[in-house]
Image 1 (cartoon, rainbow, N blue to C red):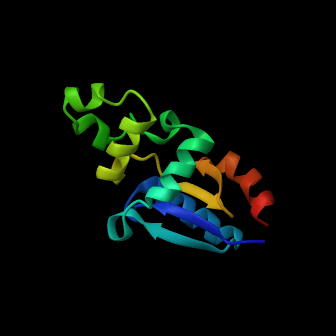
Image 2 (cartoon, one colour):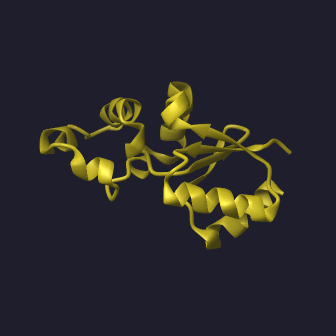
Length: 121
């Protein structure tokens, strides 16, 4: 079974919870740090196809709230959302967890993660 990849920002509380939970379950994963490595454009394109840009754009986060109204209003489709997510990785809901190119989760919820463990195990 291929290793999980966790995409996010190390100081994000939700990413910390997800990584701690994965460690506690003994699940191996690679961590992709947006701050150091950026958002891989090819992965972002695939995520948009798999889960939709609406799921990926975190409209509850501080990055979104700090955007000016014109920037927010301009996010109307996959192309405009993609441009914003590539420019401001922090606007992507975190973490994105994938395995073998398939998105298993966007965000982290321990109840849902139990199902993830059975897939990844």
